[in-house]
Amino acid sequence: MNRKLTCCAVTIIVSVLMTSSWAKDADSKSSSPTPTYVVTNDEGLLHSYVSFYLAQTTQNGPTLTFQADVNTQGKGIGGGFFGTPRVNLLHDSSAQCLYASNASSGDITTINIQSQQRVGNFLGSTNDSGNTNGIGLALNQNFLYAGYTPRTQSEHSPLEPDANCRF
Image 1 (spheres, rainbow, N blue to C red):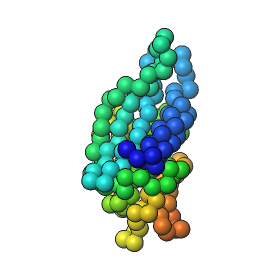
Image 2 (cartoon, one colour):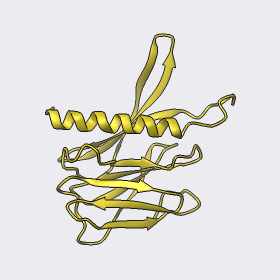
Image 3 (cartoon, helix red, strand yellow):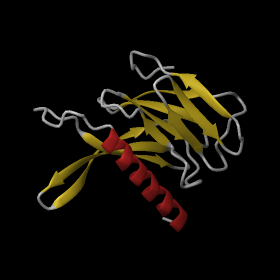
Image 4 (tube, helix red, strand yellow):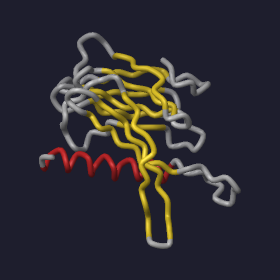
């Protein structure tokens, strides 16, 4: 693995760790706490996967346990700008949708967090491409924003209120 790709993977893991900590269940006294996952967007040249790791604390320190790979059915560029967030979710413990970009195929995959299953892929406009530095994702309660590179324009799609991960 080259140095640039390693830096990209570490940055994504750190970003997702921070996102996962925000998405924790606010009521830590609950008898069934919401699991905390570290999620990576493994954007490969031939195929792309989103990997789920269960984050836990043990007496020996923090651990990550591999849970599942979800095929996005898209293609990545195998790198890109390390600061581009290519996987995102709402910072809410009730959120059930994860969004992952596929730079080479130019689409975004929706994944159900609970089932860890792909729901579908959607495209921006026909001219959108992430081939230079990837597709950055940001979202709020109402919209998912996708920043395509090299373009300076972004697309946005409305989020459905019933959290079925469809557009």
